[in-house]
Amino acid sequence: MMNALIDARPEWADKDTFEADREKILRYGASIGLTSDELLRITDPDMILGLWTAAEAVHAQD
Image (tube, rainbow, N blue to C red; front, side, top):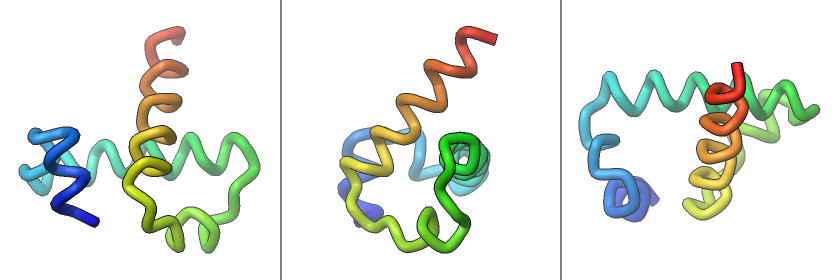
C-alpha cells in the first residue's frame, strides 16, 4: 500500500510529510463522521488519496 501511495505522492516518502498529511486525513475523516477505527482500517490507496484530496480542498477554502 505505501508503495502505491508514494508513487502517487512522492513527497510521502518523507516520514514527517506523510505524518502531517495523515493527520489532515484523520481530522477530515472525523469531520465527515468516520470513526477512528474506520479510518485506521482503510488500506485502499485510492480511498486514502481521495480523503487527502478532499481534506486539501477543505483546507484551501479556509
